[in-house]
Image 1 (cartoon, rainbow, N blue to C red):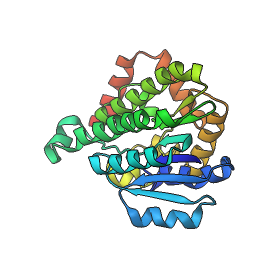
Image 2: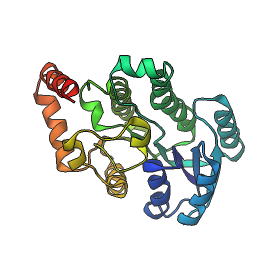
Image 3: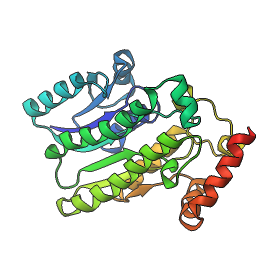
Amino acid sequence: MKIAVVTGASSGMGREFAVRLGYFYRNLDEIWVIARRRERLERLNLASRVPIRIFAGDLMKKAVYKEYHKTLRELGPEVRVLVNAAGFGKSGTFCDIAEEDRKVQTDMIDLNCRALTRMTQMTLPYMGMGSRIINLASAAAFCPQAGFAVYAATKAYVLSFSRALGAELKCRGISVTAVCPGPVDTEFFKVSGPLSSSLKKLTLAKAPDVVRQALRDSRRRRPVSVYGMPMKAARAGAKLVPHSLILRAEESLLYDE
């Protein structure tokens, strides 16, 4: 049995990956989807050309991992693609967010980093030559971001982990691609807070476009997928401009708002 696995599949980028994988990889027998909202996962069956197997649960709790691991052991599938798309962000200063909700920033670390790492660890024994891992990072991973401190740090972890893991797995023929989009028009901003920057509004991308690019880059075994010229320029700028200067500019924008 050849399968793909997608976390965060109930909405946003995760859902888009779950829908498109069946068309991009036509030899899949099933797509296994993981997210909290079962009713949304059930609706994926209407959009997918490949049968969907649902694992409804919270990746910050043990139950869904137990069910997923048990099913892996029982069926012994060949995992052709793992997409780690579950995650969320919260904008605002570290202190302001902590005053509003002391738990949300550690939850961000748990979901964006720990859950991604745990899913990768559990799934890798079922992956072989030609398999692919796609980890959803962000352009926020390119440098520290004042007003988005924890989120940017979690995505820097995803980018660094993905690149190192890709180097380690190269000898096994398994590729790892970190997807680093800028702002994408999804439900992300319902949690993070609305876009306030006019520049970010201008660079807002559509999820289908970002996912198509990510799947093409994964097929080409590229370690990083960046959609659009503005984000490619941002990546180059983050390499050339000292982060202290970038942070100074972010700080002035933060307190001018």
